[in-house]
Image 1 (cartoon, one colour):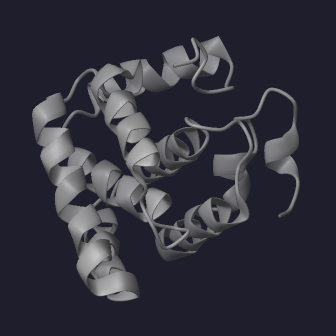
Image 2 (spheres, rainbow, N blue to C red; image 1 turned 90 degrees about the horizontal axis):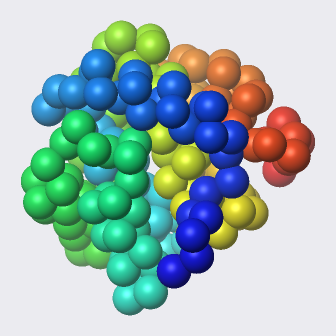
Image 3 (tube, helix red, strand yellow; image 1 turned 180 degrees about the vertical axis):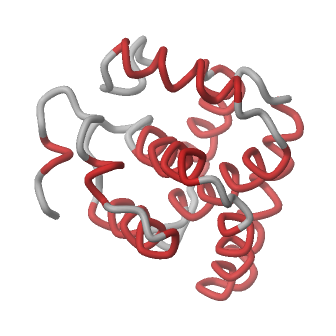
Length: 161
């Protein structure tokens, strides 16, 4: 696996990591894994390589250090199974989990986490992944610039897809 899984600035990663640590709670970890399932299933499938990369990200990412990897993986698998069994109908459970996050700062952090996760296996943000993140921005009434505006070092996150 490449040494560099994501292409965000180290400073942003540190700030995000510290902030996630302060926000450790069940609802946030549940929503993070729900949105992770939405991201990886955005193209309608989850292949073994993609699942292995995601599991590695969940268990090794400093962004998720405050949480128990075993619980995170089980939660991800729960939401992933919803997509596998119910297709698009699996999104309703994900939406409910995400809507439990009421604090706007936590909502923005959750969406930034989704963006980091989407770029974890490939520095290029794919259209289907970007669409999922934009839909969650709308669901939470978060302006997209708060999520896409400062993530990418080369400025690509600011471009419309």
